[in-house]
Length: 260
Image (cartoon, rainbow, N blue to C red):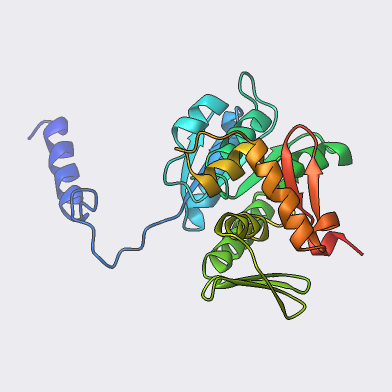
């Protein structure tokens, strides 16, 4: 009689030979690339739960347990689920850093927090969060919010024009009209207006605006942004109230749905 270990190894080999080794096979050109979702939270049980639900819904979850780790894993991510209260670099600090950099300024971020005060929600949204979910929450609801936010971003990326009430910015003709009347803007004013129209309701820092419109090699100061904002308000009276100053931060184009 053969030893039991030999029989077990033989049986295991037979089973493995029937299972295709997908990890060593070249990826088909038709294999879709899964969207990467970065989950940042210092609670292991919660991150494991969200990993399970994200994988089940066809996403590729990436986990970070603190803010510093999150920033190191941000490349190639489609959306960030970000906990507010973390030791060290907290969620708001991470959010601020993401919004300053051009490559992550428009990256969708859903803020998670146990803080349910309205003032806390306002702070998170004004600093640039796209959505806000209070703990405890349903993983299914969070997944639904993630999908809705990704759909919205995809729609924005396909836009050839942007509108705000009776203001229209056309990317194809590079023209801006207000109530059908053409508004003459400089190239920088046009790019600045586009940044706000792409991020309605979101506070944008002066550093982000300076980098995205003028570029990282520009040696001017954020005062340049203030001057161009003033000119936009003068040329487009609608923006005199709609384009708000966020103290010690930057500017925000009020979401039309928030006004009466």
